[in-house]
Amino acid sequence: MPSIDAPVPEEYARLHDRAVELLASPQLAEAVNRLLTDDDWARELSGHPAPGEQLGLDVPDGLDVRVVGFGKPGPDWVPFTLRLTGCRHYWVRDRKGEIRKEEFCRGFEIVPNPVPGGPWG
Image (tube, rainbow, N blue to C red):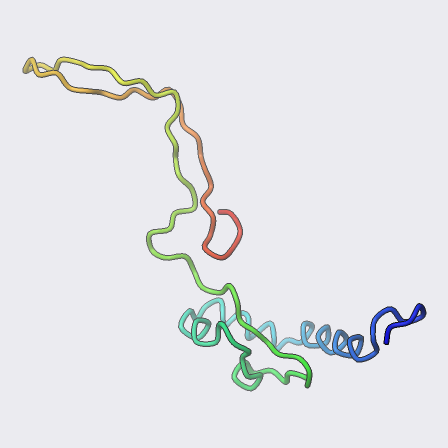
């Protein structure tokens, strides 16, 4: 039970210390680097607790490692969109005498697109 002297239960404090040690381990950095470069492996491990030995980690009892948010955007994703502004439509007659609609825009905006499952581009 938490007290005024120890607002966090001792068991949680121990788990926190173990998690901080795990975060500082070079094995975790290696696993994250591999997850960033191997999309198939990241997809295979995502959505459920990943076994520590599969990641090359010694995960302490009471903790688990979950792979979330890895993977690159699809091939149709673009980091930004150009949006035309100040546009006007005009009807013009071409050299053959046919009338057609033309659009004339005076400016554009650069609009960032969100990365699926992540921050803005």
